[in-house]
Length: 268
Image 1 (cartoon, rainbow, N blue to C red):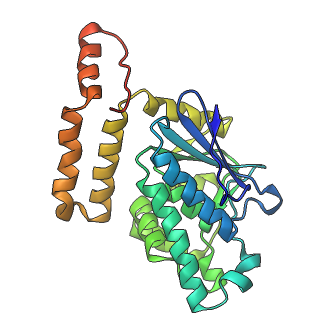
Image 2: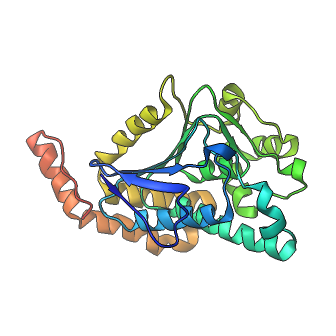
C-alpha cells in the first residue's frame, strides 16, 4: 500500500493506494462533517491530477470520514475567501479546476457516500463517474438558501446526471433529500445495503480487471459526447481507438481469450 503526499497538501485530504491499484481519497474533517476549506479543494485537485498520471492506479474511490461524505464548502471562511465578486469568481475557478481534475481523470472515479453530500460535497460526487450510497445518505444543493448561483460547470454536470427538470427541482427547492428521493432524482447509481466503502470496492473490482487504455478511451469519448465537444474532437477521440488496436493490452486480450484464461493487462 502506498501514499501520496506533497508540500502543498492539506492533511485533511488523504490518499492511499492498495495492491490492486485502487486509490482511496478520504476527506478527514469529521468535526465539520468534512466541509471543504479552500486549501482542501486545491489539494483534492492536485491529488486527482497526480493519480491520473500514475500508471499503478487503476481506479479512484472518494469518501469521507466520520459518517459523512461532505457538507460542501466551508461557509465559515467565506468572509475571507469569498467576500465579493472577484473573490467569488476566483473561488469558483479553483473549484472548477478540481471538478475537472476529477471529471477528466482517465481512471474510473467512484464516490462512496454516507451521511451528508450537499452543495459542494454533492458537486464532488457528481464529478465522479459513479455514486454508491448507503441508507444514511442525504443529498441536496442549498445554493438558493445562501443567495448563490451555482457555477456553470456544476450546473452542467448536475443536468447531465439527472436531466434538466430534476436539476431545476434540486436547485430551485434547495431541499436536502434522503436515499429514496436521491434515487428517484438520479443522484445515485447503486445502493449499499451494508458497508458503503465495501460496495464501492466491489464496483472498483469490476473495473480494475479490464484494460486501462480501453477504460480511459471509452471515458474520454463518453465525456466528450456528454459535454457536446465530440464533433470538434473527432481526430483526438479516434486516436484513442487506434492506439488501443496497437496496444500490448489488445494483444494480451486476444491471447487470453484464445487460451481461456483471465487477461493480465498492464496499461500499455
